[in-house]
Length: 561
Image 1 (cartoon, rainbow, N blue to C red):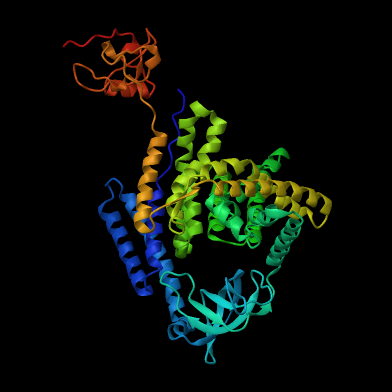
Image 2 (cartoon, one colour):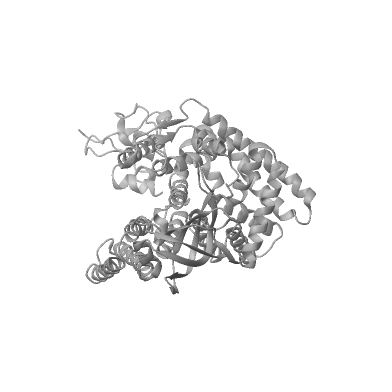
């Protein structure tokens, strides 16, 4: 008997959804309220565990409550420590403060029409000094300062400014407005200096590539979008291609896949191959600098590789759900960051909708084309409502544009990274690879500009929660239509036993047994080769692969009126 279809493991999905909703609320609560809510969640879990052990679904309820308690406790601890520090008090009073910390987001230029150019950067706090009284500080602070010398990721700096409050739910403890640029105290650690040098080599190699391709190559390779012009960035947004310059799961999939394939070709033991893939993934995280999508992709890869180590590959929905739970317990603020939201939604769409769309379209389009079409359609369907929060329009060219650039994404990413590695010792080969990667980026930019110039490439949509809800409903309806199979007329519905002509075999399930009124289920007549049907349990036995009455040789009797 052939194995049945694989069933998606969705048991951790409620816990992940609960963690996400609780995290969105936790970051807007005080430490006392969040801690109290965590104790209530633990008490409810104990009550359900003791009183509902035999009830169906009790285990799921307990898991959701315990995960919610973990998110609440994590958020309460961080909120409490941050609120008790001197920086929060200075922000509430608008006082001057001196902070020391490490750069976690490199300076980005702010649009200015007059005066000194200013930049925005984020610093992970070490200490804060106010009126001569200092203390250790935790959390992060957003700094708005005049443009100064470049400050690399991981550099230790000191900055003086006036503190101000941040919006509710914001990750940063305060906003610091400085009159002078931050002062560099110490260079980054050695591994971050290596990453800075590697990113610099990508920029130097890209400078030799003319036009849009040269500005796009660093973004596709290492996520550096600083050189992309405003008009190209707008075209990428209109065409639904912005995700190509945000390092996510695609980078880790490509790089880890190459490492595993190379190890397999060299007959390296499986454990060594997986260890090499993990080390390569860690190096890529350092290279591209952590972000919500990078953290999600890296954690997803760790879960999948762990499944390979124990000989049982992780099922994608369970792996994604476990990743979401772990990341939100460690950092509840991720739940409100658009990059993390889009990354998880896109992966979930590929996992849940992708296989169904491939199965639905394979018979008409062929499996290769169905695979190519299912990925962008599934990702676009689930991500469109989230994108609507920041861009009140819907792009109808996103799916065709993603299909058009799909063959160029892997060469641009992989060859760009290879050129970066070869540049110090073999510049000629690095230049050749950069040229091929640049050609791939030229195609991506060309598609983006062409798609953006099409009439009504982006259709305006209702903004706000009402527009999001309307688009969610439209997405569900559209998905249902995409997965709907056409049902032909039941020409043989009235024939004895529900038999029908061979061209309609398999669709007699809508027929009714005239003696019982039950629907006839699908079953094959061993004598005629036509699909007929037993009713109820007999049809169920046939679906499980066990022969029913007529398959055992008993003649089929026509029911009496």
